[in-house]
Length: 203
Image 1 (cartoon, rainbow, N blue to C red):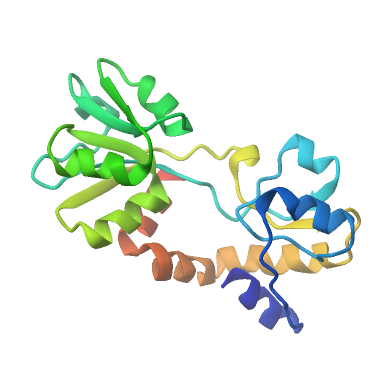
Image 2: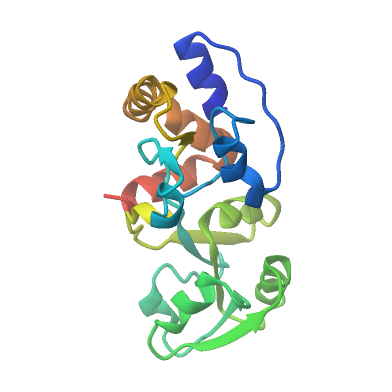
């Protein structure tokens, strides 16, 4: 949706090619792609090979809990069992909470099942996934943790070094972030609740 909006705004057609994530930077440097828009982050290592646009999204971490036992903050988890996907940054985040018993489980669906079965008080998972899970589990709710605006964890558009597309795309992307069009895409895919929490958390 972001790519289509920018293409329409700037008056060009796009051809989307599905590739494995580990091949995206190579596609740019070899000339097989003009840009990459795929949840890719402007890390210091990638910046050695490609250029990036303004960051347009900052991934979030959510606490998801049952509506009959809400857990909106890390403090509300004091003394509780909390499920997390094994080996993820969400596991590390939960480990920073005080007086919490961590239950590490392979795979986010299994984490949610642990919560649904009332074996844990809450789970700590990706915010976008949390928004999807509450669509199919209306007895659950989620709250986003404050969002850290870390560029290395943000999403941006990648270009070959010195790409002539970058300045115009940057300008259109900034306009999209400011005029509410990007918010519409968040609502379309993640819902009004996610947008409200995201806006509050990223201040």
